[in-house]
Image 1 (cartoon, helix red, strand yellow):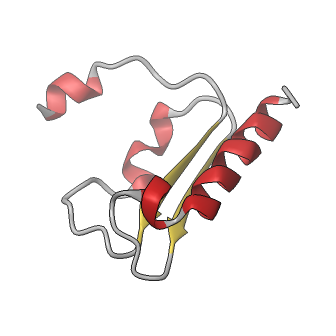
Image 2 (cartoon, rainbow, N blue to C red):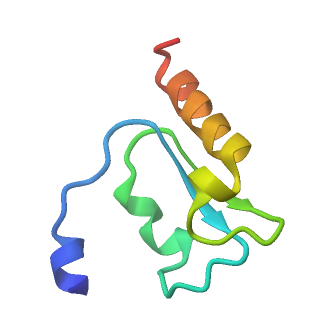
Image 3 (tube, rainbow, N blue to C red):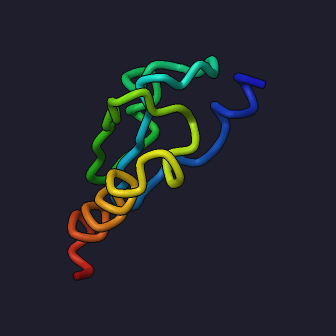
Length: 76
């Protein structure tokens, strides 16, 4: 599966990735996939016992990431 994911095209639009501090799912470290993003990019750790469902568990942080990615793109 790792080889399959590595063949995906890069993300070429501004992006903000989020990770909850209580996300117990196995996943690569943000710095390991940073190179996949070729435009403006930020990774944010959302603290406060947040799991993997950020829209529900941290709606403010989730909405802020959308607004900030929009600003990074210069669309607003």
